[in-house]
Length: 444
Image 1 (cartoon, rainbow, N blue to C red):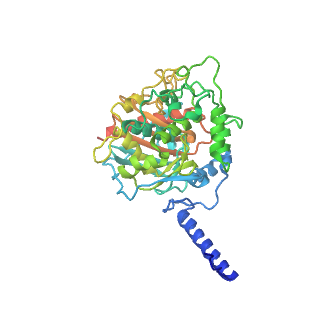
Image 2 (image 1 turned 120 degrees about the vertical axis):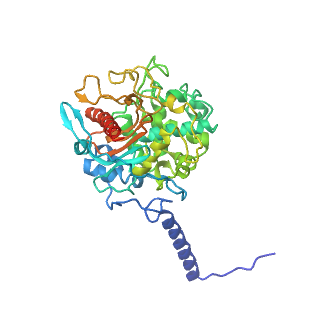
Image 3 (image 1 turned 90 degrees about the vertical axis):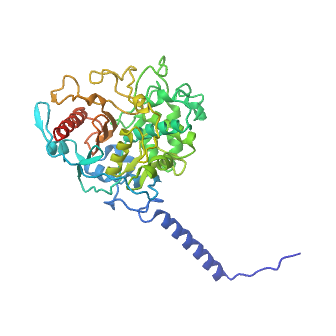
């Protein structure tokens, strides 16, 4: 049977198209409203109008870096990790507040105000026994600011790997990573285990030089600013070579390319992005106060495992409290294997990891050992428990320091002039945490 033709006036067609376009625009606006990020419905503050170019991240001046770091979640595609409306776990004020901290560096006495200035601090939080002993916001940052983590995110991913192992999603850290990322077969990564990847002892050559425009890390930064970042990053990471004669496990060398692969192992093993796994396992269950954003290379599919965690200062602190507890939720459920933190902070002694300042090694499962050099003109170099402190560190001064014995967590946001120099800035961080520990102990 032949259908009867239906005549539609041109004006009607235009009306239908206009309505469809309006609906599509409204839907897109709703998904991005009001912050310009899909599914982020509460705008962090301040919400800067003019943003710097992402491709210039390594050469921003310090004032630009403030704006860039608190708006990194807007500079790239991102996946939101939501609280799912959970009630924030309380962070009450401590009975004894931190007011007077004294330490010496290069023979000069320093106090709290000196530390904030020396470190270009834009946010500082000190938690003692889960209570706020000190909280500071600088350069216009607020309690609603989402600050970018840089490589502190590596430690977050490390914790999520532990969660995935406890949940049976990842069989063992002794698995070869090709079991989870088969496209690495035939590359220099093919015989590397997850244990070696997390300790950065893959033996694969990677230039992490932040000051060189020709380093692998700089090339990765440029990839991330391109319209199709995933293929660019994947091709870069797959193309690197192995130093002749160096086997996996023999040499320690810090490697953000390898850290990105840890994120890919996690995502392929769990079937979720880093952001979604963080949300489903910790963020919505521990009681965080605000949604965060993870830098995505392919939204909803691939996140950046080497960096990209953006969250509030207090939620950084809550994450530190979660780790300090051994991965325990407020209801008592433990999400990490019993020995996971001990294994994560068992420092590798592979060549390059052992130094005068770190005689037992400086790196674990993407956590750092951080202490002043033995010959440094500084005090207090140690406390009774300072050897138990472990660190999540990111360039330009981002920090989570955790001392489980002291029940102490320190979170720091900064915009150092240079990515990692001078090294005395790291010494000063260690001294400051030691001094804070002493100051708070004296008030008990």
